[in-house]
Length: 471
Image (tube, rainbow, N blue to C red; front, top):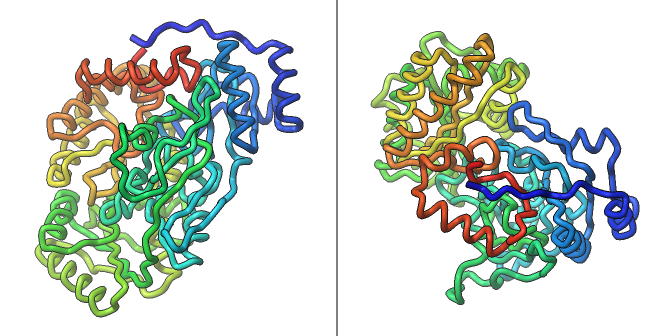
């Protein structure tokens, strides 16, 4: 059980302290409070009491020290694109809005590194390093708006994780502020580091519950200059899932291998009519397959090899994107599926991940549970990683079924995922919405160890309370 904490409500004296520390950057007006009360998670709304927008580490240190001493809860917010409720201030209190800490401090072309503040938009960082001939691969669907600090908090992935890995694979060092105001670096700006416990990787994916990240050092790789994008239609969703493993077993190394079932594409095309195309009635799913390389000859050889694998299956005509604009349209469809579903209905998004070969079994399980419990699911995701996003839309489900029966279905789904050797979140985190299911994926010993770590970092429990651990 998470310990019950009696947090203080903000007093006029507290607001005076913050206003003196952050002139012009303290907000308690209705518009700012409403903006920071929600993120992209379902329809939740948890208003903070005050929103603070610091611009430097020293200010954050002073804020946390004060809040720790006065037992005021603090929730850190990036761009608010999260899907697990990790940035929602469920206990009110202070909302630490990181949007003003948005500088790229240094691009080190000799050591292939970039140092940035947490409020830098991921795509902005990617484009800045690409201009120097370098590449930062992790690319969440919300890369055009999400912050790099939020990516650190959730250990984000994205489509290109199948070849290049996720955020944790690129973080070298972090400047953090502990709940008592202590400022420290977690590691060193080097590729190898066997000096004590790996505090850097402990912070990555900790969902803002252990410390506030104020500077980030990322490793980079040389920019890849050429790519090919294929959209392969399948007459069977099951076959589309099976083909994923066959492509990789054949020795091909795509830079993205994305699955979209029919409804996912239909929702995305309704949401983005300019990118719509004809979708034959007998097509159940698509794979969006990207290959990249520095060498054009090898690039086309890989694409031809993948096409040969696809010939084993019943497919429609495979589309080869012929221009940068067409590639962008196809990627936009994939990246906008979540937004499209949300615009259609209240929904829940489950971020399941299984060993890649179990993907067909996972999809079949989702559809079986849908028939059993009467819900409609829209499935898509990073098939190359076995990471399937299951969007469950409310549509005409009764409130009773949505609130009482659906959690039973989700619990069954998660139990099946764990039985397949998977887990309940691949890249969205546990946050608020998944915490009651955490015991399905983790043994009690692991939960107690994690709670002990939280206690060491944050003994007064002020930092992002109410997240990760079951109530």
